[in-house]
Image (cartoon, rainbow, N blue to C red; front, top):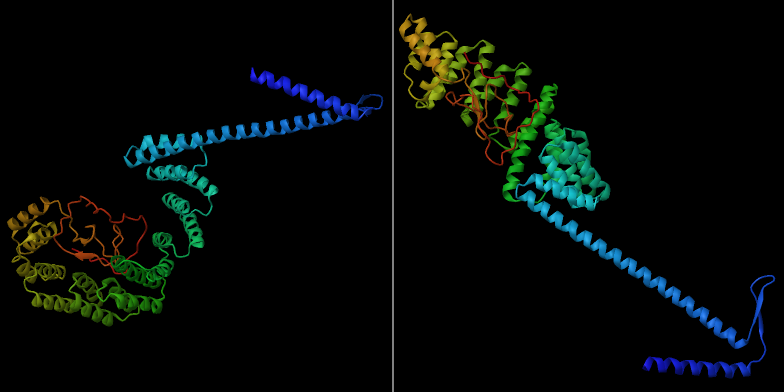
Length: 466
């Protein structure tokens, strides 16, 4: 009722004002809307019409603005709902993956990307999952897409480098790591990964350059020690590669550099000896090996000396070395076994028999030992005892060849090398004649690096067994 009365009142007031101004402003104004069309309006009517048109224009503008705001609010609410759903799916996906539900995690991340194809974290996680599943092409595709979204994202670049390395596209992986280092020259993970790739490709000089940079980084005491050991190994590898190329002067410098950093690094000493062998200085090489054996007591040096002295035609010298070693350590059955084995190799049947027949211990469980003893009994025409030794040998599932064994991963090899092919560590091989070599490949301890399927050429010749 009040609104009706107010409306009537306003109409009366407006009519009164209109009549008042109409009397004050008599006459009319002609308004032309075309060449032949026109109409007349009083001045007051023209003013009111202008005001009405202005009010209508303002109303339209306000209406458009409000409509735009409504549409934007609706779109914003829709985006928020989608983002909330994307975030929920992403969280569920990460939880599923961490809970070892890989298939469910893949499905959830794919749903996330169906809603938001540019969701960077989902692209990153899904690519990582495919890499774990060894689906390298899909991992590369996803991480390359993520890289297209954020070209300078280091986490994405590192993941892509992992994919490319897994797919054996090593040069592309190296280039990706170089891109990381352009963004952050001191990025330790990228430097280490680049070094490892160079090691895998046997580009030892490049790996050594990076390792020298890493040694200047701030690391924990334990990490610093590990990196220092790796520096010694890489220095040795550079020398080994130079020696293979015939660059003996540079190789000698590298081997001495490795020894300077680690006085007990056996492969570098053997490398120095091999340089002398190649230069025809066999006596000097033998002197080095004897001196190093006196310091380290490493039996592998006796093996190398054995081959060297026999090559020189001086079996008496290697017998002397073995006898001196046995005199210094008369309770060592390993040295006695190798001396007896040398006697047998040199056809010194009586000496071999007298020494080997007195041995007691683990060697009794080794096929090589029983085969030697069988041959010695045959030489002495004791057929029954020879047959008994052969039966023992045939009853043992041991390798005939005396193995070298890595002290870190227990990998066994019939050849010595400065670096274990299995765990990739240097200076870890020992020569133990009665290591169990039943043919069952030992497992690596957790955290031990996996075998790299790359060729590895040795410097020293393997110990020849008989």
